Image (tube, rainbow, N blue to C red; front, side, top):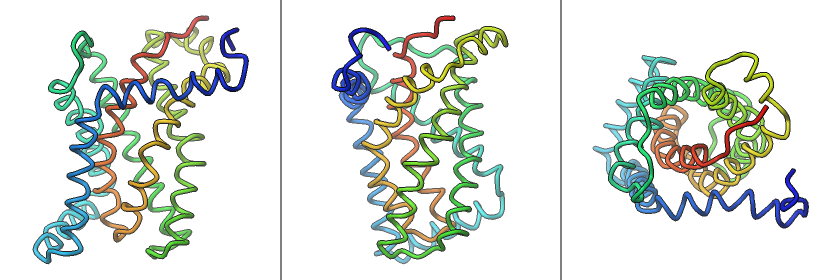
Length: 237
């Protein structure tokens, strides 16, 4: 830990500052996606024709299985956010290279599979009830176990592999607990600023529609997450 971050308060500021910077840079895109998500949820419960359309999406998701999860997460976490960032990107911010985009898209495919299986596990363990207790338990497990100990460390290691030019020796030298901690915590702070409310909505829907709605939230979160990752210092051996 650096000298300027030895106190708990200084370290806390270091952790949450990237979240504030990302939200400040991309708040129009975030509000746009959140607005779309809210409209879809309201339409599902209030408009029968919308419920029928979403029901067909759920059937498609069930029919295609993990391939649906992988492909749609690439679009929601990679393609769609990049299109939005081209419009909302602050002046002077560099555009991603083709290699960076391919690296991100491959990562999102794996993340989609992880999330889909995690949602299925939650349904098996806790059921598909929409009561407050069930929703709160699922959100807490999601945000305080799955996200900080599985999903975000995987994403961190994935980007470390690219930053070390896919060199096994450099990658192994970079994988230190302090490095993972200092990279995961800002991402987790960002997740906690966005996902809990979104997940209450996601988990209140039927299980077959939870992952499709996650895709919209993932579009918003990925914009913030990639912003933070691209502004993190590269590891030193």
